[in-house]
Length: 383
Image (cartoon, rainbow, N blue to C red):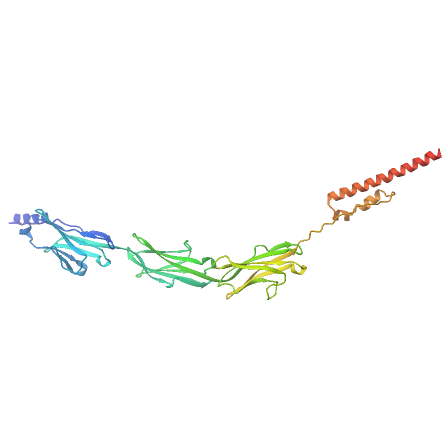
């Protein structure tokens, strides 16, 4: 009797081999087949029951043999019967997120197969702050952004400011997969894009915020010191960058509240970019009073700033030594020395000094020669 029981158990084990839990991953909108088969050996005598598919997590009977028992047009049973084996494959098309779960194929009280269907879901950002996708903050204060993402596997959220990883405080709120970026003490150079990226094994999605940092005007001038001649036309340029745009932007004399008007021949103002402007003025320097210090001043709702520059007069008068046209014949070497005083060195260059010295020596030699000639004539007369 014992031997008969052992034989029956052996037959059952051969007809229904042991199974292992199988995991199948499927992407949203794809199609998946869940296979289940049974060997026909002694099928009728051992277990004539029909093959059934069950959804464990919902306690639903999905199919009975080849018939789908739930209202879902996406489900179907593929059957194959032959002398050796019966197969009942559960096909699910256009996979949805709710299809995730444990499926069991049974016959009577025997489990033939057990499959965990793991539905892979691309990342999706379902909420973000600010909602209108842009933020304006005053320079020196903090800016806070947040993103909540869903997907399977759980997405990883990373942040970039103007394409770079900027040091900041990133907090992750468990249970919601929410990431919060806090930028401390922001500056005008943080203005631009703030990107929130959520990634998993399937793909990456992004949300792009625009950050505007308000700051008082930043004024620059290309040249802080320029030289011009009297009656020249001086072209001067200054630039300002600010958010919000400057309400006052002009060139003034120091401590004056009204922009310069005297001598202005022409002026032009234009935008360099969204936040920067340039002012160019041409001043006709018709009077010495137009030389001196100037300031380029700009003001917006956050404050005032300025840059200073100076216009100086260019003097090119050259002092020339007067030519010596007449000298007394009795001029001596002391005359040359007296003429070659340090005052000459301070008013002429080396070349001019050499010319003057040569002329004086020549005149001295001429006077000396004339004296010798007169002396010889007197001697001859006496003889």
